[in-house]
Length: 186
Image (cartoon, rainbow, N blue to C red; front, side, top):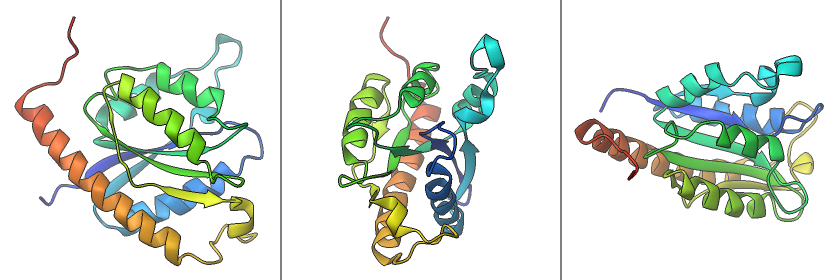
């Protein structure tokens, strides 16, 4: 199949001065370098709409057009950030029958506790989570001041595996959706 897979790369943090920018930049570079995906960055923090709350419409459209998702999430207090949950809950059908992969970061757990909780959330939304993930334990020590990984070998190998699995699921589910549209029971 020569058609590229549209993958939405989602920021999991909206905090000012967030480290998520560094990890997302690395993930997008890896995704683009694979030559198999068309990454589109989705940053809920960029959609602030003042007193009216968040303007999700453009992000919802981007999610609807995506074949797959990569969520880049930190772990805060053994969980994922509340703004990420707000964003996930702002749409429904856009997630259905599509694969979701995770790149996480944090302290000692590397964000894995946040990922395990997100797997439950995405299962409820009828999305398929990819078992393989990339995690950065004490991430701020793994990247230099320019945002470059100090020892990239293991993370790059893990990302290659993640992208192989994501590609397989994205193609399989895209083909399935085109054959028989996915819908939830009434």
